[in-house]
Length: 262
Image (cartoon, rainbow, N blue to C red; front, side, top):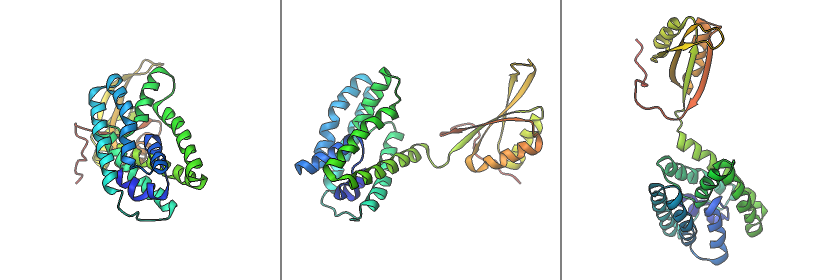
């Protein structure tokens, strides 16, 4: 995240959301290092998080924010790789999003506004994402008054790209699909999935809510790239089968690794 800030965003007066965005604006107005504001503004929220959310989360976030603050200080003298605001917004957003995503993936945070959002979420019907978005509207709007509205719009681009990169980093590229199939030809479908996809299946016992008949439910997990072939197998074997597919972001244990097909 420090690389995304100091090598791309800050030199081109493009900001991110949250405490980071406020820190960039304050650093510009005061000519003080951004690291001071990153650490100083986050501390009150970390204390709040320590009391309300948990010790491990607060301490891991403090560690992440401290390393980020030191990183921005060390990188401040390094010249920006581009003077084009659009390129800075795109590449800065990508790198920054990867950095934030890695921290979130392993149980931390790099921004105090996320702690505020978690606490507000407990007291109100608004989701964490909605609270963060609401706060960032004002922060990104402030960039328009300080850096100009062109830079505020570049900042919005950077924020959107970073937001998407966080999702990709947290969830991973190898998105998997959970599949539920109800069919009278469950054995034929299960055998076909094993033979043609190399995927093991689990048969679950079910009961029709309307008919009361006993049903066999096939459950399996496939990769996103195998989804189309799975649908074709089910369609060929039993066109009347019930098929439900959901997205899952983490698969561990069992025999998820693909079996060799000879």
